[in-house]
Length: 51
Image 1 (cartoon, helix red, strand yellow):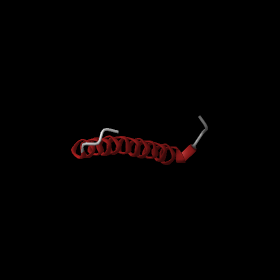
Image 2 (spheres, one colour):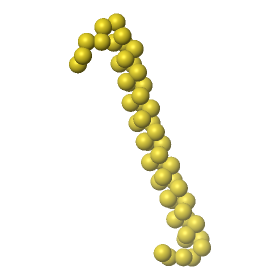
Image 3 (cartoon, one colour):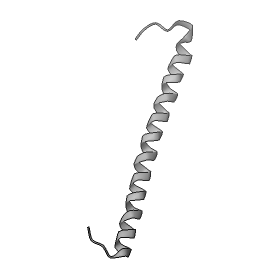
């Protein structure tokens, strides 16, 4: 790990915030995708089409 000197706190906190935001975006995307897929399956079942 490089020596960050007096900026270590700022740099490491920026990395931490970035990682948390990226993980949050991925989690929300997966959650929304599953929800939309379930809604699409429900619509297909209602319409009576199978494939």
